[in-house]
Image (cartoon, rainbow, N blue to C red; front, side, top):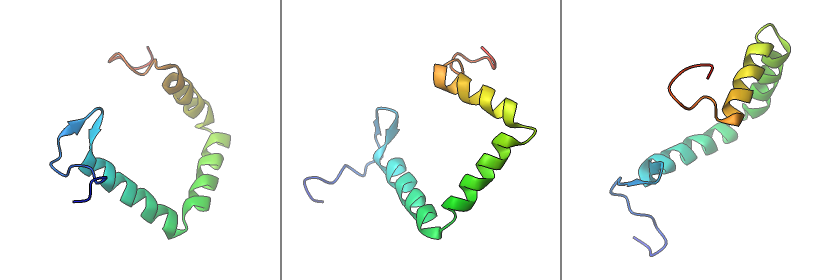
Length: 75
C-alpha cells in the first residue's frame, strides 16, 4: 500500500468508511462513462415540470434547510 492510499480495513471515518467511499466513486464514474447522464438530467427536469414537481421542490427545500433531520417527516 502506498503512503497516500487510505486504509482498507473498513473502519468508520467520519460519516463513512474508505471501502464504501471507493465503491461509491467507482459506481459514479461508471455511470458517467455509461453516457446516461444527459438522459437522467432530462428525466429529472421533466419530473420537476410534471405533476410531482411541487412535491419534489418541497423535498428539496426540506433537505436544503436541514428539516429532514430529526426523525419526523415534514418537520
